Image (cartoon, rainbow, N blue to C red; front, top):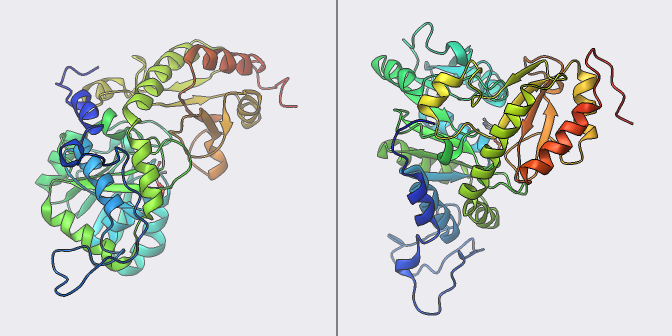
Length: 382
Ligand SMILES: *Cc1c(COP(=O)(O)O)cnc(C)c1O
């Protein structure tokens, strides 16, 4: 673990008591769920909540909580992609060029191909492990995703930020795989951090959500204006659920990362596992960089089994693994990423370690792997 001072335990403790000072006797402790599209607005509308596309009291509670964790003003969106779209469409203009990770979450690349290119915004891609190679001259915006999803390669956020800034660009970090408790891209020099809170921050697999945070007031004002004008707003109920999930993020993420460390170390010695990626393993190519810039090593493990058949059989055979896309939920889940066309081996499984007690989880994983005979065939999957 890095020896950098970690303010996150105190932020986690304060999160539970953020509204204590403004509370009157008899007020509820729980965040208010306000389902209202309009507000009482007589006379001069200035300075008051005006309309549900501009403001909502439940949004304010969640944005205050996220700002506390990010140590930066935060703007919420109805999904991770809505957060990414808000950054792209509000901050870019015709003639701009952007850089996207070749091995990161694939939807931003599809969005660029289908919709940014027709606005005259060009884009290139580069593998995360070699993100510094080639420099950043000419890029208005550089998106980093580290560890990358699903390959779990890592790049040096501070070095990228320094080089991009020297070239006059903006650095946007997609911190979805790490959450504010696992990695602090703004402290490492990124201009903007964003995340799909659909994953661990909500954590209960019942809401899609996203947010963008920045210490640049102009960027935040532009994002707020974009949200208000585009109408890409979260619903109050989803916002309330997301806030409820966020209250236990520190606890869940701590368990998930600790369990992932234990399970990765045990998988590393398993005969059915051909290759293993986890930034917390000293043998992993990402380990040195990860140790320097991440507060935790994350809850995702990449393991390669002998074939697509073995991978599917393993997932199906383990009663404590849900076969599902996405990650970061309380339940452990996994999927064979090649089924989406990711550039990974056919037997590559992205394992998202959940909140189950670790020894129970390991026993179930070990038993499911035990059904795989090294050499390619399986005797499971009925
Ligand atoms: C899931 C994910 C997104 C998109 O989030 P949605 O809520 O599905 O729109 C963006 N970036 C990363 C790294 C993700 O894993």
